[in-house]
Amino acid sequence: MQVNRTEALDASRAAIQRGRVILPRRMPIVEIFAHHLTQDARILEEDPDAGMQSYKYIRTGENHFSLAFTYAWLSVSDETGAQGWLRFMRRQIEAQERANRS
Image (cartoon, rainbow, N blue to C red; front, side, top):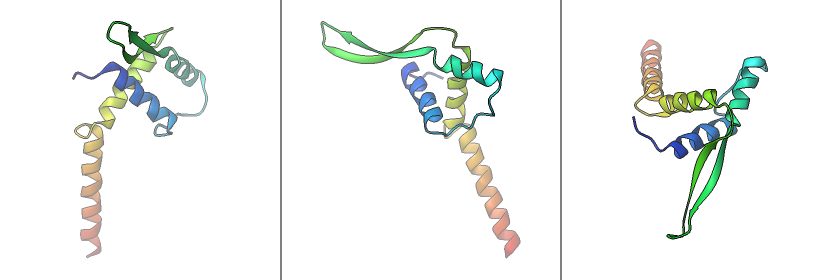
C-alpha cells in the first residue's frame, strides 16, 4: 500500500480530534500513546525557487504509537478494509432481522 505520509498523519490526527476514536480511561499506556501522538510536528516547507509551499511532518521525539495508530487508522477507514467488511456485516444482520420479523 502506498499513501502520502502527510495525508495519512493528517487523517489519523483528525480521527482523534473529531472524537471518532474512543480511548480507554486514563492509564499509563494511554498517556504514553497520547505523548507519542504529540511527537510528530506538522511544518510548512517552502521552495524559494519555485515559490511552492507544502506541509510535512517531522519527528520531534519517540513516535512509535503515533505511526502504528496511523497505519491502523488507514486500515479501518478504507472502504475495502475493515470498515467495508463491517458495513457488509451490518447489512447482513439487518436483512436477517427483517426476514425474522416477516
